[in-house]
Image (cartoon, rainbow, N blue to C red; front, side, top):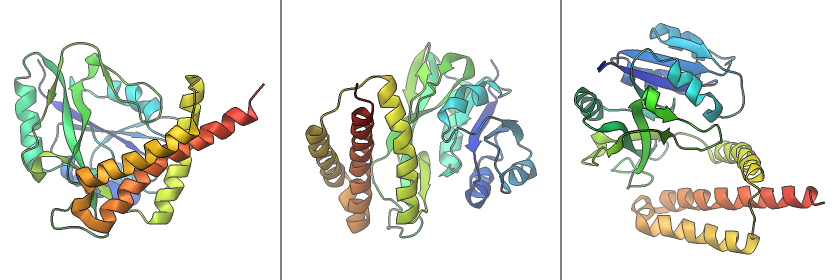
Length: 259
């Protein structure tokens, strides 16, 4: 079996962050950039690193392009990295070792932490405990739904979890946005959430959603967010607010389209 690894990165106007990401993955066997027609220097930076560039129509979020980008890779194993994520050497060594002898596994979950560059804490964390995401898999064993914030579906085999040993064994999700930029991003992505809810014809209870959002905020804060003090509380509040905002927009959509 081919043990070479292709790194797949989705891009759109990310010239300010892409170089930092590519520096950390340049020693993998292949880099595939799936770009949604950037109009800044994103593609120039990708070419500097010898990346294979494929283009996909601009649709506002990456999920519709996932399967296309994955199948554009030349190697059996694919590692998906976002342009605002960093990978360290200990995790790269673990990934290579895993691919050399995967046994019955065809995919793996990798921990991801939020790294706040504007106001870093001693542990470099916004939220201490990492979330686990399926990011490494054999390309013929995966299907990635086109809906916003969807997760890949592994069609066969087992999923391995890379153990959280220390900060070198997780992906760093770089948080370098202002409050204004975060709100803008939330506003865009919650519109996509409304489309997803509408397709599934979901029912909505605003009162329940409100208290669920508050519960989510405090649950995350007392579980791990408190380690980062005020910054952790703010970020946990944003996470709770995101869900409430998407449901309120969906409620508005249902009222407008009520027959």
